[in-house]
Length: 504
Ligand SMILES: Cc1cc2nc3c(=O)[nH]c(=O)nc-3n(C[C@H](O)[C@H](O)[C@H](O)COP(=O)(O)OP(=O)(O)OC[C@H]3O[C@@H](n4cnc5c(N)ncnc54)[C@H](O)[C@@H]3O)c2cc1C
Image 1 (cartoon, rainbow, N blue to C red):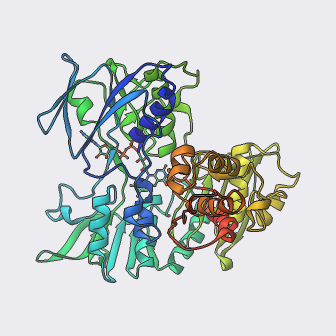
Image 2: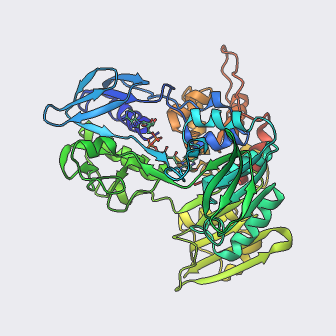
Image 3: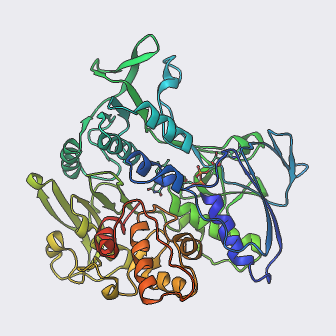
């Protein structure tokens, strides 16, 4: 996903041909067209189609030539000859080689159990297909790992009728994001969504009958009957090329603030595989910031002073899970000691809101079962909006000038409303794109980048396009029908914003 962003940004920067002409070769081991990996958990939840994940490609590549090799693995970076070698025997000379090799899902039990290979993961389209096939009729599923992705998988499979347990090593789920009090309420919401959580659970081994998994056994002796085991226990940056090339590697490929290897400035690394000074994030926003910075360097443009490694470290995280609304803002689960923290805990309604303020600014928050308040607090945090004198009023109603429109009419939606938070795209940007001739979702996405992150704004963008088709019709061309996953109309715009303006 980060390589796609790099290409897109290069396309934009080189379009006027005043920059360097670039000759780019993209080597990708997956056979598929570039796709939005974030939406795989939405596919599991049956809220997105596998066929709709393809990312728009660069709008303009007139300033560069691009050759894309799919289904080809780079096996070796020969730094003496400045050549990348691939498993199909091809060799590709370079001035700069960009490692954007991402990360691989970690697997538990790799050495201790011969059936460890039967444990499924979710990282690629192929993993997603296999997982859905394995759970194709209601089954008992055990998800190992109660972090964000583990819970998304668990809720998605439960919504498809599976009987799901989540095993979590820590004392409560989402322990990197939520304090225990909020996690208890999230746990109740998970149970209502059909997901049972088992905490302090260390996976020991799989029980089986022939080739069939029958249960998981925990280190403390507990046993949970199951047919399918899915692991979501983190990712490992794919560093094999850099390591083999003798470049510095810690958890990820070590890079400077300029995203170059300290061992060789002709090698850059971005995205999940890279380890800048701030560490590996495993999130998309920092990878995109790195891609943008590297694109400027490669195109020979002036580069801002802000190191990409410190940009967009993603301090707002949202659980994209069916039936369980969780948003966490700030650094870690505990509120900052120096802040004033107010809390609303309402277990009967599976609702918990905690806001920490310093002066009149939000510095941390967590919201369970409170979408509207979460959307407002996210906006207040990101835009550094001044808060009312008494922060307690935020707990129930959010901001006095809520970012969430009260009516579903796009006419009254302020032009500055953020429609796609991942890319900072506003209603005005969508309207301008439509006026400039982008009449369908693909064209608008390619132009504005809306929908290319968490994809949660798709519904809103389609609603705005339908509205614009009415107010700004094209005379001769029949109006396109804007495809979305769920049918709907412009009146679903507001409720979609409540749901989806925020994302991790
Ligand atoms: C289900 C799911 C949901 C997620 N949700 C979120 C979310 O809500 N928010 C968020 O911020 N992040 C999320 N993430 C993480 C996000 O997807 C990653 O941060 C992002 O994909 C990183 O992009 P990347 O380009 O660095 O790596 P990738 O997208 O993994 O791309 C790397 C590509 O390089 C290929 N490759 C590796 N080695 C080689 C080689 N030697 N030769 C050729 N090709 C190679 C890989 O096959 C892969 O196609 C999610 C991830 C998953 C799996």
